[in-house]
Image (cartoon, rainbow, N blue to C red; front, side, top):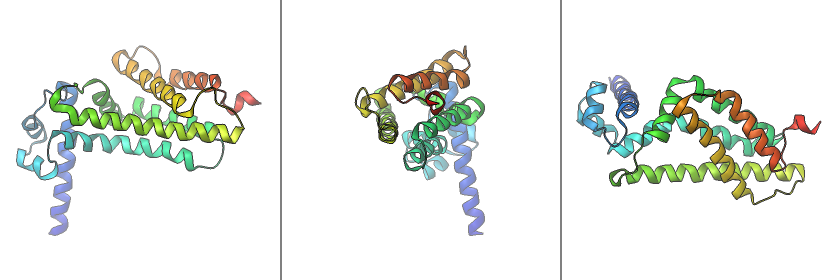
Length: 209
């Protein structure tokens, strides 16, 4: 009986997160109430508060279902053996492919990038986004620093500065694609990243012969 109760609670939590994805995408985060999410999930507001303390907590949990696996992949690049540039390129191709082809990942990324209004009562979400950007830049910084050390190359700027540029390039391309879908993200993003890496003295192995 206890196992069944636990399974029921997990199912309810998953249903709430699924509903939050749908409603946030339709209405934006600021205009969505917990009551609307409860109705979409077929549960009571009390059921939502059993699992999440507020809308910001619910939003964070929705993000973590999708973003944490992606974040874990880039973290592996720092620890993995072999050429860091090659590993970075592999990770980015996989991450972009997941955004393009996996509906849930695409929805959550679109909500995070396009549907979070920067208003006072969503300050916690803005703080969370800022922290996520900082963490992403730090991961890229570690990868670029590792790649430069592996190749005995002096970077043209600090690894931190170049990491911010790489992060802005990647997420800028994703943002543009989500807005208009007028280009092939899966093809163009790797090309743009390769060009950036060449420009900072870290070309793909194929360029080096």
